[in-house]
Image (cartoon, rainbow, N blue to C red; front, side, top):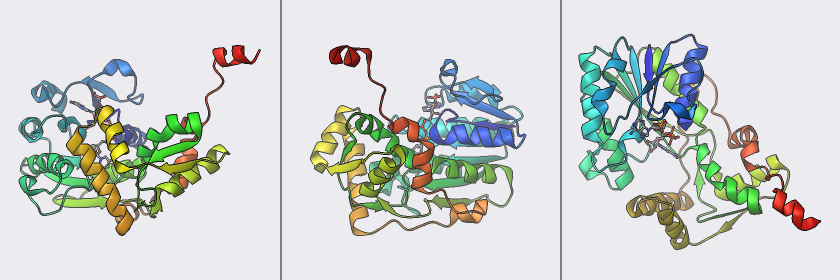
Length: 303
Ligand SMILES: NC(=O)c1ccc[n+]([C@@H]2O[C@H](COP(=O)([O-])OP(=O)(O)OC[C@H]3O[C@@H](n4cnc5c(N)ncnc54)[C@H](OP(=O)(O)O)[C@@H]3O)[C@@H](O)[C@H]2O)c1
């Protein structure tokens, strides 16, 4: 039995589906079981890791491994405390291993309180809780997810134009299903304790190129129109992103202008095949970018 947290998320849904396909029993955690976002076949557990980690105590009975998504612990200033409380319960229940989905923004070998940016710090406190938990642990540190481009979908559906800064920044985004493949490998095979895996996609690509590839998939020209970082920051903050997080994300994005992301060998090494490309991701997600059918009021106006 594997307990999967973040089971409704970009990565966790894939982890659940892949484990079930291998015949592994899955217990999937969500705060909102009514959302229906947990793949069929998993045992659904309702719980909140941040506000009530102890409430998940019963769900840890008979569990062989935990897939822990750090996302649950990023809301407050110190996610390390609830993470440690949850992991202590896991240790007491005899759970032997935990695989943490954390972030490539963490600077390796640097303690949480010395991380140079707030996103790295928030993830590193959770990593430190995992490393001191007494469980056999593995860290997965992915770079930017391809799924982030879904944020462009409303703009593309409405105007075929993406407004974003740093169009020429070059990164190697990783397909969320490749992260799930790696996670399942690490959850179900031995030899990964005490290991930190960095994950990227198989190629570097600019934001301009991503917009163009989405256009090819939907069959009409899509382009990225550069906006200033200040404008992007205002939009992020108005959308609810805390200002220090917005500043960090923009500063990180900008570094892709000067030096391209390094390609990590993890996906190929652990899955035996190259990572999925952005073009493949765009084809799989075409429906999100296709134009909406005309609304009834639009049709009325043409009469
Ligand atoms: N996006 C990127 O480019 C990127 C890059 C590197 C690392 N990461 C890291 O990857 C993680 C996000 O992974 P994702 O995209 O798969 O997730 P996601 O789609 O953002 O979904 C978040 C998941 O976390 C769960 N969750 C949130 N708060 C929770 C709480 N208090 N208790 C229990 N569960 C909670 C949600 O479950 P319910 O809503 O069902 O409760 C949901 O399944 C973050 O740590 C992020 O920093 C992201």
